[in-house]
Image 1 (cartoon, rainbow, N blue to C red):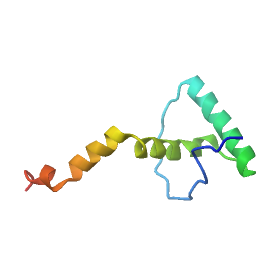
Image 2: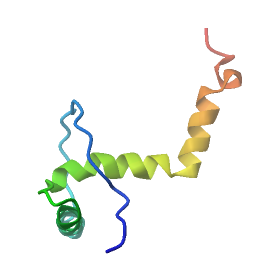
Image 3: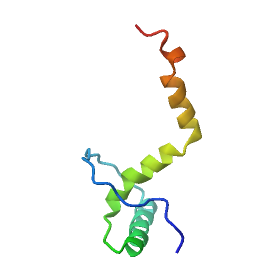
Length: 81
């Protein structure tokens, strides 16, 4: 079985968010949880995968990283104050 991009889930204080998922996305999320369950040997709640998947997506989005670097650079804050 190939190594999945989402690994162990950290137990962190959650913030409740309600979202609607298209049925195909939900089916894939359930299938991903089943694959991770067989790999980890313990049941995984599909809803608990959403946060790490989003985190991974944002962490690997080069455009978003560039935008964040620009927003946090001292030059971007010169007009503040």
